Image 1 (cartoon, rainbow over the protein chains, first blue to last red):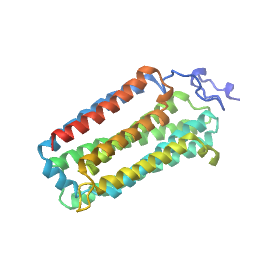
Image 2: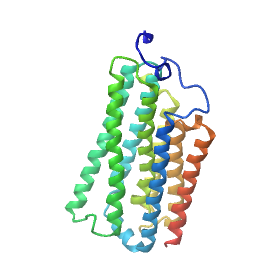
Image 3: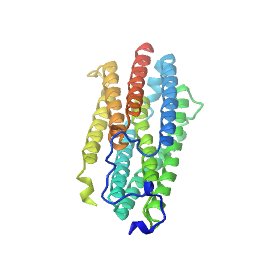
Length: 203
Length: 94
């Protein structure tokens, strides 16, 4: 049935066939150039944060007490759940269960949206306390790091929307597009995994 | 749909969630109160397990465990360098 669609063979997901071969780049090489670039960029940001933390040790410890570690931990669990759903969506797509893949994608996107809403509440709460970007060095880094990460989450949600359309277009989805979108989303997840202890837990 | 949860990915997610709760528990109890957990020791443990979590996401969810050697080495090197950098800066800045 799938053969009736004019899609390049390499981009068609054959139902029930996993990506079996070893030594294959997940998604597309171009997304990995982007991911590695982001890893380097965020590392530089982590280094800048740690440098400033060393310069203002007492201030950072004091300012950190204004953050909610419990909400941040919950955010982390929500993003991890979203990553699981997206990974399962890719698996369901490979198995040819496009409707189930779409449902997993929706669940993943819902978790991502919940993360955005939670961050919006967190920011508005801090701003209401008078803690702004210019308050001190810690909050400058807090808003910049969480803001840049939040931008990536929002971009990821756009990506997930494109994948949802791909899954619901009525013809077999393109394997690479699904894997590229999932790779980006998981990158957003593992960057938050480092940001969470860096901003919220380090004493 | 439920059948898909019977996958290694679900066990990886459970482990990731358990490690998150452990990191949160350790991080929120270090450096506070009279029965405090040694803060610097906790930072090393917390970041070690944060990097373990990031590696699990990269290896299992992003499927880098089945990727070419250069990509696996690049990702592991980044994790090792990030862990080393954060812990080094932490001890230098105390």
